Length: 568
Image (cartoon, rainbow, N blue to C red; front, side, top):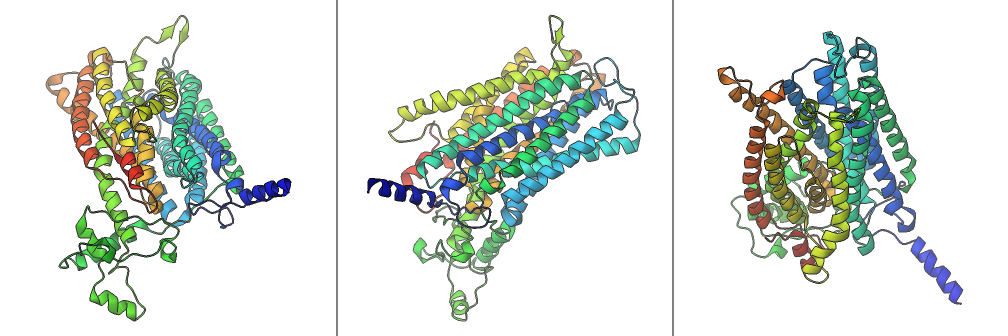
C-alpha cells in the first residue's frame, strides 16, 4: 500500500502545473517536472555566454578597428563606438515591443539571433575581402590603406545588422530565462532571483573570452579571424537555443502596450471633470481569469497618480453601454490596465537616474581601450592587448557576484529582520552609484585605473528591479528599459566628448582627449564625470525613497514593503 501511495504521489508531481500561467510549446499549461527550471535556464545561460562572446568579439575592439583599419582619429572613433553601442540598445526597444505585443519571447529571440548571425557573416566577409588591405595591416605597426565609399558602406551595414540582431535579442533572452522559473513557487522564485546573477555572470565570462583570446588576435591584426570566430560562436548559440525548444516555458504576448496606455490616457481625459470616488472598490475591474487579461495577473490599486483613476470610473454612459452589450475600452479601462500606466510612470525617474551611470560605464569600451593602447602593456616579452585589460574588470565582477550571493546578501538579511531578503534592488543600485563616483575620482587621479566591480551591484540590480517592477505584459520592456539606459548613456557620452573637445581645443590647445593622449587631460574629463555622477546620486536617493513597489494580487504587504524599501 505504501508503494502505491508513493507512486500516486510521484504521478501527481509529474502532472503538477506551474501557477504563474506559463504554457508549453504546444500552448498547454506547463507541467513543472517537464519544463523550465534549471534545465532550460542552463541552456539559456550557455546561449547568453556564446552570444556575448560573439558580440564583444566585435564591440570590444571596434574602437581600434576604426583607428587602425579605417584611419579615424581617437575622438571620432570613440564617438562612433558610442553611437553604435547606443543603437544596439535602442534596438532593444524594438525587440521588446515585438515580443510583448505579438511574437512572444521565444520567436523574437530566434529571429533576432538569426539577424545577428547574418550581420557577423557579412562583417567577416567584408573585412577579409576588402578592408584588410594590404594583407596583415591593422596591427599597431602597419596601418591599412584607404577604402572606397562602397566598402565603408558595407562595413557600417554589417555592424548595424549586428547591432539590430543583438539589440533585439538581448532584453528578451534575460526575461525568457526568468520565465523558466515560477515565482509563485517559493523554491523556483528563489531560483529566479539567482538566475539574474548567473545570467550576468555568463555575460561576463563570454566577454572575458572575447577580451582575451579574440582581443589578442585582433590586436595582432588578425581581424578577419577574430570576426569569423565570433560568427561561429553566434551560430553555436542559435543552434543551442533551438535545441531546447520543447523544454521552454512560454507566456502569451499581451497585445500592443501603446494602445493600452493610450486607452487609459484618453479615457481619463474624457472624464477629466469627474470626481473620482474615494473608495477604490467602486472602480471598474475584471476578474483575473477574464479572457481580456491574457493571463496577466491583477495589479492592486494604488493612490499615486489619482487623475488616471478616472479611466476606471463607471459613468452613467458606461452603464448604458454595458446594458446594450457594448463597451468601449477607450472610455472605460479596468484597474489593472490603469495600474500598468502608473507602474511605468513610477519607474521613469529611477530609469532616468541610471543614465549617468551608463555614461561612466561606456568609457570602458572607448576611452579606456584608447588609454590602454597608449600605455606600456608588455610583461617580459609578451604584449597584453589593450582590450584585454578589461579582463581584470570582468574577473572582479565574477568575484563580487559570488561574494554578494554567498556572503553579503545572507549577512544583510541576518542584520535586518527575520525572514527578510538582503539588500533590495534599489539599495544595490544606490551602492553602485556611490562606487561609480569613487571610480571616476580614482580614474582621474591615476588616469588609467578603472575600478569597475560596481557593475555587480548596479546592472544585476537593474535587471532584477526592472523585471520585477513591470507588469506581466511588459516584462521584456522592463529589460529593454535597463538596456535603453545604457543606450542613452552612450549618446550622452558622445555628446560630452564632442562638447569637451570643442571647448578644450580653443586657442589652438590639444584638448582633453587628443590623438596623443599623453598631451591631453583625461583626468579632467574623469573629474567631470565624477561630479555629474555625484549630482545623479543625490537625485537617485530622493527618487528611490519616493518609489512605491508594484502591488500584485496575492502578494502580502510585508513582501511588497521589503522589496521596495530604500533606507539610508
